Length: 105
Image (cartoon, rainbow, N blue to C red; front, top):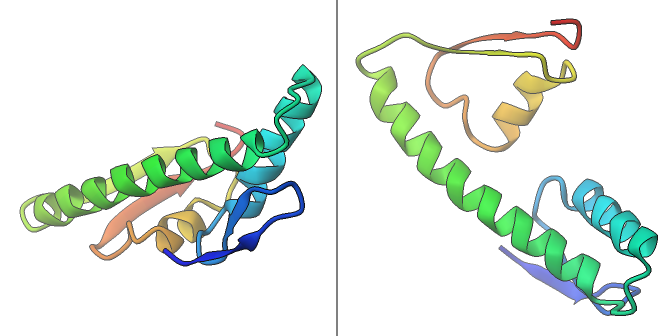
């Protein structure tokens, strides 16, 4: 993971992490709403979340890869409709998967 230069609030910006902008904006909104005085907290929270998520996704992808050799796998979700894109971006679609995603479910 490549770190960029410090962001506008002093937090370190990860230039290669998918979802950084969304998570960073959410964390900034929460810290602003709570009136937190530490201008670097949102960036640290966002990076910790993304690092943990990536670690678990990598472990999950490895397990799913092993299981896909023996079982037909699928994901059924009520996600926003971009589940296939998200799964592809995080490396979960290396094995054949059935995907069913609808925000109406």
